Image 1 (tube, rainbow, N blue to C red):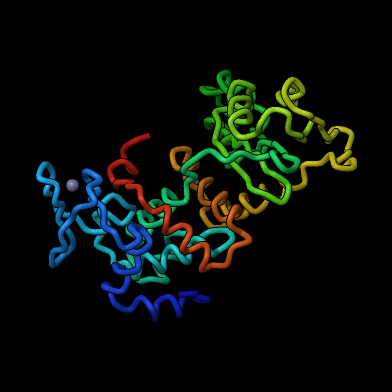
Image 2: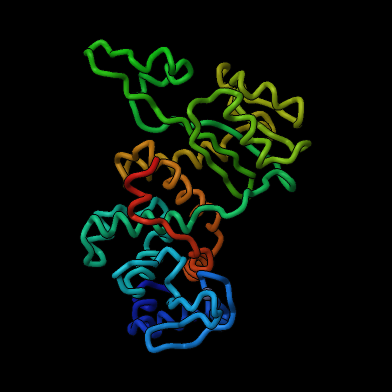
Length: 312
Ligand SMILES: [Zn+2]
């Protein structure tokens, strides 16, 4: 199968049984495994499988333990949603997905959040082993004029603006990008060293080369890395290899998507949107078909509606 377009994908996945066979092959490689106890001894039943382990004996289908669990939507529509959500460069809103595929907006919203769960990196990525790395922070939402108060957030938590309204604080996101490589992102409470340092150490091996702007928080990087900073304050943006243009370009795609497609992203869900944008960016050299298959292989995780709406 090599789908080049959404109509081709929908043509192939006309029948639910075709979708199930395809997904069983991707998930189990033809050898079903019980999702409750990991037993490989299972019986085929009319509607799925039954575990042959006498201590388990539970029934299951290929959907159990994946993002598709407990969903009434057909695989066909799920596959189309994954195709659309991962191939639009700036993402797709739940309103648009609902219109395109004939879902309610509430259902489309839930489908998209489960897809974001699927897009999340399952293991920490290491950057900077083979190439130079740029690190930077971005501020999302809130008023531009409130940007400076992020750094002293605790003082302003109860403060009011001149109009008597509470400040809408911008949300801080730290990003690390490898030139010609991947990006990793994290939503942090603020741009202080305790939030940034551990994240950088987790993703960039000591001894790598890192470029940043001249913010004081990055001055500690010299202890573990070859570090240089651009002097934005002096209007110097590029000096040989020393620049942060790669991450700046990524921020502009992220912001155009978050503001243009999603309009408002709550603090609670921001991390999931970041997973979505980094996953799309990190697979930019793949075809839509390769991306579809890759992400389908990562679909073993469940995000219940309850967890999505009631937890933090
Ligand atoms: Zn079992």
